[in-house]
Picture (cartoon, rainbow, N blue to C red):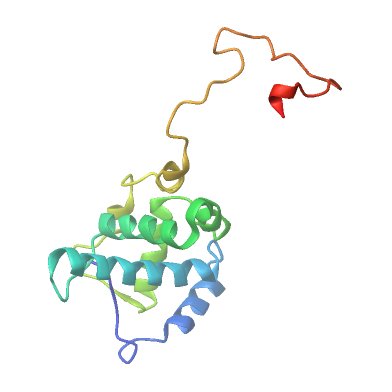
Length: 162
């Protein structure tokens, strides 16, 4: 599906991004650079898995690569970082991709469409789910015991607690 285009054939990536952002400032410049890195990450991963040298990347494959790369780069802050850049959904990734295609920075195949990114992944959920507690946390009132543990106040520690 999507691939980076040789820089000799197409405009410089930075120039393409500047041109896009000058017309549409929904996304920060860093979002475009991150997407390029995520595409490279995805291509490398697919090559490892499939032993295929050159191939296009599908929308769902790229979204999976975006999640993987964001988690690797930003850990528990991944959702926050992408949201700060204006990227909140898989559809936003599709918008970035097709802006880069239109600017000549990414290539595409005839079958590629912005619809390839719609309702594929809940980006925020995928980015925060690895950091959710592995067990349910008991909240006050749920255990059937609404009383707080007794307060010690200024009482000295018992010899057995030292």
